[in-house]
Length: 95
Image 1 (cartoon, rainbow, N blue to C red):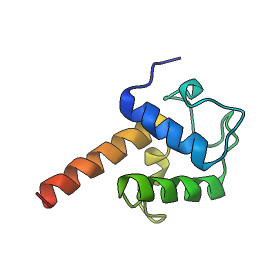
Image 2: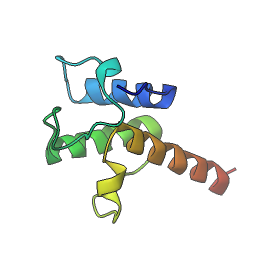
Image 3: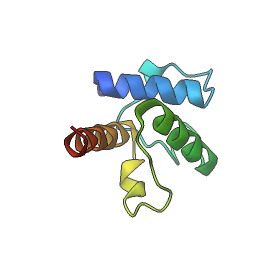
């Protein structure tokens, strides 16, 4: 399993706690494994919960109508990278 970077670990912890995935440790989330349709068993309601948790924790709004949601939510790594891009963009726009 590929190793999680610090941003991925933080996000994994947020996902595990937000979704009450008591059977799973954040460190056990493969950053390249699919979040949906894979072994985690996550569904569209879980996607909404993740989006809400991300919004609260990072101040990043994940829109349901975003054309690239399939790629953004592909796996932990993709979601963490999207959050970091959005955070950097926010800093540039609001110095």
